[in-house]
Each structure stands twice: as structure tokens, then as C-alpha cells.
Image (tube, rainbow over all chains, first blue to last red; front, side, top):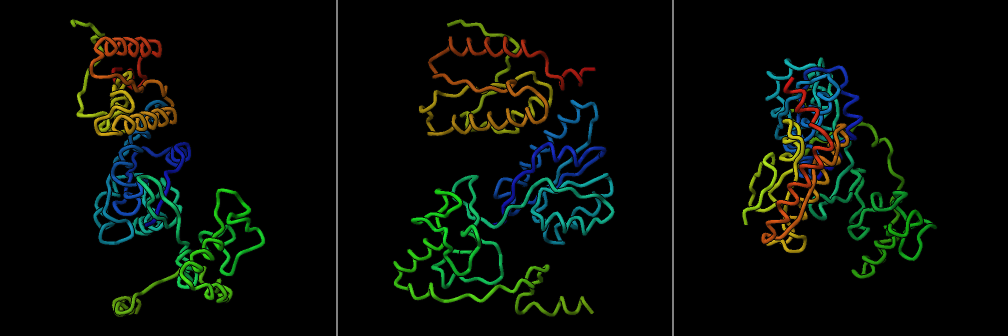
Length: 226
Length: 114
């Protein structure tokens, strides 16, 4: 799932400086699950903003609403009649949701309340670990299901580097070396020969905004573009 | 045991301090309460294993948020005692009341009254 972290309060306060009526929009999907931007986090942030502004003798009206997802038009449509009443919108969704919200309401300033940190697994309540950098050239088949792009500090497709140190990475003794983990897993599976498969240099053209249309869903988009 | 404790303390009963939510604490201060404190069972004796620990974390979180906002973090506190300790309950109520009096009224509450 996409995980995010609430921005420092000072930064949020700065963004809202000068605005008197703000709608804080939460997202009920990934950021709600990772406890960063769901309904509850919207209430907490609103309470904080309300108190801080009252203390500064600069009261604000900050309302909250949480939509199912901010990355789908049909849910953003629910805000169409509401946004006009506000000076600004604050979004607690991931970077994707924030941009889609800003795109739908181009005349209203949209501010991010969270920093999106990546794609992560849930290790325990409130504890998330990154596992994927969405590089669009997955090599997990040959690396024993361990992603070298995410887990290696250098993101090496063909590792390890010279900094591997008895199973740990040179950046910290607490950071396991991804390529050592890959070696161990492949060895245990009897697939060590796979470690020798060389992944060709990544096509950095992939770094432009990517569009994905799943097979079988080409037509509606094609028709819309015409 | 006809114990007395300060009459300004309003008790909100919850099944376990693990039920206390961050928003309960924040909303109390936001609405003008001068202080809030949670009284949970002794650590390690929770019937649900970790209810009072969860409460302690939420109290700590609330304190951090209040400090960010510009209020005294110490308006929110956590106390622990066993259910048999009536006199300790009264003593904590007195301690918290005196502590809050030393901090003065919640500026948010004072604003609402103006």
C-alpha cells in the first residue's frame, strides 16, 4: 500500500497562513490504513489547526471530509458542490490524490498535509517498511523475491557492491545487504545460478510520468482522446 | 471510605483506558478544559494486557500535539493505580488540580468566555 507521513505542524501552519476558511480532505484508502490521512487524522489535524489559530488570535474555519479515494474521479465528484465555499483545500491523501484533487479544482489552492513516502508492507500496527520503488522493470523472479532497487542503498540491479560487509550494508550495521539476502535465499532455493543473470541498464526514459492502461481497457481512453 | 477530591474534576468513565482516544483528549482541551488526565490500572496488570499502555501512548501523543500547537503539554497527564486504591485516586485528583492551577486557565477556554 502507499504510505505517507503527516507533515510537521509548523509547515502545515505556514501553508494555511492567511486563509480563513479551509476544507481538509482525507482519503479513506491507503493513507487511512497507514494512519496518516484518514477520517481520524483529519479530525486530529483540524483540532490542532483550530487551537493554534485561536491562540494566535487569527481564528480559522477548518472543516473536514473524507472521501473513499482521492485518485478516482467519481469520489472527487462528491466535493464539487462544496469546494466553492472555501478559500483553500488541504489534502491528506498521497501525492497522487493531492494532484488529482488540485486538477479537479484548479481555481482553489490545494495544500499537502502529508509527505508520501512510498510503497510499504505493514509489519505491525503503525509500522511500515518500504518494499517497492515502482521502477517498472521488476527483477524479483531472479532475486528470490527480494527487491534490490528498494532494499539496496544504491539500488543496484546487479550487485553487490564492494561495501557489503558480512551480511550488512556499509551505510549501517543495522541495514542488511540486499544482495547478501538475495544470495542466501537463492542458495536455500537451489537457484544460485539466477544471481548471475545480468539485468540490462534501466531505461531512464521510464522516469517521465507513466500512463498505464490495462489490457482490455484500451477503448474508453482511446475514444476520449479523439 | 468517604474520601473527598476536588469538585472541579469531572469523571468520564470508560471500560478500560485503552478506550481513550487521542481525539477525546484533544477535544477536551480544544473546548476549553484546563486539563485532562487518564487514570488507568497499574502497568502490567491490564485485564486486556495492554489497554493502559495504549492509553499512555495516546497521552504522550496528545502532549506532543499540544506542544506543537503552543499549549502546555503538561495539561494532559497519565496516572496509574489499582482499583483498590481509593485514597491514591483522591490524591491524584488533588495533585492534578493543584498542578493545573499552577499552569493557569486554558487560554482557549478563556477566549471562549470573552
